[in-house]
Every structure is written in C-alpha cells, then in structure tokens.
Length: 490
Ligand SMILES: Cc1cc2nc3c(=O)[nH]c(=O)nc-3n(C[C@H](O)[C@H](O)[C@H](O)COP(=O)(O)OP(=O)(O)OC[C@H]3O[C@@H](n4cnc5c(N)ncnc54)[C@H](O)[C@@H]3O)c2cc1C
Image 1 (cartoon, helix red, strand yellow):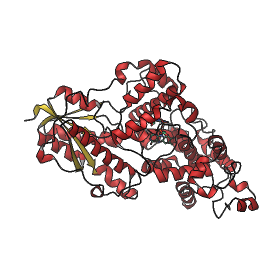
Image 2: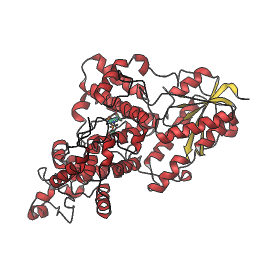
Image 3: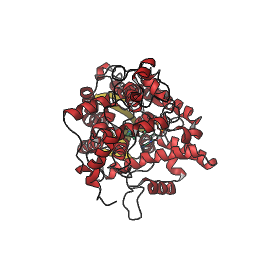
Image 4: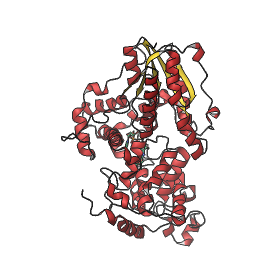
C-alpha cells in the first residue's frame, strides 16, 4: 500500500534546491519527500554514438548533480542517484520507497513528453500518482493565447500579452530550499555513490579550463557577474568580442538557477526606472518562453517547417553539398567570421547569438544546405542545446519559422563581420592564421594582393582557405530556390 504521507521528486533539467516548483509542491503535500536523479541511458547512449564520448553537457550535469546532492545533504537530506533507463528506474524507486506519488517539472520536448507518458503509465500500474507542474518557463502552453484563443506565432504581440499577464506571483520563488521544510534523508540501502564520468561512458572535457562553472554556485556567480553589466546589455550584446551577454544559457538549460529569479531581477530594474539593458534582456527571456510554447503547440516543427510551404524547398544534396557542410562544420569556409564562430562552438560548446544567426544564415542561404543539418550539428555541440530555442533559431534563419527573417533578407557575411567585429578581435581569437592582418583586410583576406598576403603572414590557399562560395552568386541561387514559397499567404 502506498504511503500517502510520502512522495518522490524526480529532478531532470532543474538541478537546484531553491525555488523548485515540483519540490515545493511535494513538500507542501507530504511529510516525507525523497529526491532522485537518473542518468538516463535513453538520452546518454545515443550521445555516446554520435559525438566523441567527451560531452561537456554530461560533465556539467554530473558536477551539478554532485553539488545538488551536497546541498541536499546540508539540509539533512540527499539525492538518490541512478544510472539506467529512467522509465523503469523511477517507477521501481517509487515502489521501493512506498511513495504515493512522483513529482516532476514539465518538459516540453516531444521525446521527454513520450517518456513522461510511459512513466505515468507505469506508475499507474502500481497504484502511484504522477504529478507535474510548470517550472522551466514563466508562461507555458496555453497560458498566453490570442483573442481567438489560438497560440501566438508572432513575437511582438506575444510579448505584449506576456507582459500584460505577468503578476508578481508568477515570478515569486517557490517554497523550497533553506528556510522551508527539508526533504527526507536517503535511506541507507538506497544510498549509492554518484557514478564516475567513465562509468557513464564519457571522458572528461575542457569544461573547467573554459571557466564554465556548473551547479547552483556557478549559476549564481555567472548571474552576479552579469548583473554588473545588465544595464549595458542592449548596446553590447551584438559584438562577439565584447563581454555583453549573460552566458547563462547553459544554467537555464539545466535549471541550476530558476527562470523566475532571473526574470524577477530584470523586472526589478525595469520597474525602478528606464533601463533599456534590462528591458532588452527580459525580451530575450520572453523569446525563450515564446519558442517553448511554439514547440508545445506545434511539436511537428522538430521535423518540419513551421510554415508548410517551406518544405517544398529543395536544398543541395550529394557529395558537393557534403563537402560544403564539412567545411562549415570545421570552420574552413574562407569567411573569417563564420569560421571563427564555428571554432568557438567546436572548442567551447558556446556560440554568441549574433554568430548563431550569421552561421545559420550562411549554411542555408550561402551554401544552400538544409537547416535541419545545421540544427542537428548545433544540437550535438551546444552546451545550452534546447530543442525549442534551437529549432526556433534555425527556422528563423531559414525563414521557414514563425516570425522569421523574410526569405529575401540574406545576411552578407562580410558586412556582418565588418559591422559586429570591426577590429577583428573575435576573428583573431579563434583564427590565429589571420592574426597579423590589418583590420581593413581581416574580413575578406582573399582581396589582398599576393605580396601583401605574404607580408602579413597569411597566404590565402595555404594558411587560410579561399571563400568556398561567392556570396553574390549564392544569394541569387537562394532567391531562385526560395521562389517556390513566394505565393505563400502571409
Ligand atoms: C540558430 C540559433 C540556434 C540557437 N540555439 C539555441 C539553443 O539550443 N539553446 C538556447 O538556449 N538558445 C539558443 N539560441 C538562442 C541564443 O542564441 C542563445 O540563447 C544565447 O546566445 C545564449 O547566450 P546567453 O545566455 O549569453 O544569452 P543572453 O543574450 O544573455 O540571453 C539570456 C537568455 O535568454 C534566452 N535567449 C536569448 N536569446 C534567445 C533566443 N533568440 N531564443 C530563445 N531564447 C533566447 C536564453 O535562455 C539566454 O540564456 C539559438 C539562436 C539561434 C539563432
């Protein structure tokens, strides 16, 4: 017989103690609440096959789980950690502990929804309840709808409705962590050590060397640092060589800090007086909610264009397209800003937002390659990979998405470079071969005559590739390729 006084909270992409919706809900309803995390082989095993078994995200999660366990032990509690199939382990744990219910925060990705459905079903078979709640976003699913009760597919009216609906209660911290009832200690018989990275099938990465600090402490430090700069966010955020953005995306991805806490901090500044920095930053957080609700309403975007007409576009395929794609992946396109950006993602797992737009546009509209290939590459390499935001970003760049870039607006990668990395500081950081070039030549080094190339120590074709495609010609080809969508009603 399940014990109605006890429950289990399953942590997933919410690796923190404070302001945790599911934990707060469980603690309010049950006297004894255990906490668990599963290194789910359904997620980890495919990663091992697809990328070198060094994956920064796995290391980030493991470090965060260690910290979460320690924080819970500090409250005389602890985390039950397992490695295996979550769909089997969670119902088994629920039975073993004799709990009446399992609590978790909502996840909006199609595979996670399927997994949660399976867990709910398995729990139902053994007479336990499955209780979930919102945590990852401020507003979810149908909370923000149009006057006709449909979902918003244009950002500006969505943002307006989002702000109109917002009350202090939406951003108030949920009752968990220090000062609130503590979860129960891990029963001795269930208290196993947290698996080593190698036991999970992964090798260590350069996470620490990069200065990416995982866990709640890392999140708090990163956020404190950003709060010093938030007032300047609007004017600094577009320049990849400048410390403009927050670098919080990986923490928001794995929930090492709550979305409510960061949105609250931005709101406090906005309310205190005109603050374009905080205002613009809050807009970015609203974009995150926007894409999450798009995925909830249109899970098919994970495979198809949001605007169906765009699936008629024929992208390049075959060995030539594969070679162009490989050059893009490895940062050898001959367009310095694109190449530097691809080195950034390959070396660090992060890419600046402006550069995500530039390289995505370049892949689709200069190389004519299907956005889904770029999306999949980002999914494998980004530390902050989030299906909703990644898909939204790629479909924006490919013009197939909601509120996307019009198809005839095609970034010129050289002009983007001159505008957003004028002194070539970012390019020099990631492309040492170009470091000796003057600012005026760094954005299109192939235009320098051979003698000057030698003088500056960068011979095109030897030290750095020629552009693999000519932008003006590629632009024309793209306009022809996209002609199939011209008649699509707006
Ligand atoms: C092609 C493409 C792919 C992208 N893939 C992802 C992804 O997989 N995961 C991801 O979190 N973001 C993605 N983004 C959005 C954005 O680039 C990153 O959120 C941002 O660069 C992360 O850095 P930051 O935390 O310093 O951002 P900041 O500028 O400090 O923004 C603060 C937070 O707002 C959110 N945010 C910012 N911009 C966006 C946006 N355009 N859409 C949705 N949320 C946003 C993020 O949670 C971010 O951490 C993508 C954008 C593009 C164009």
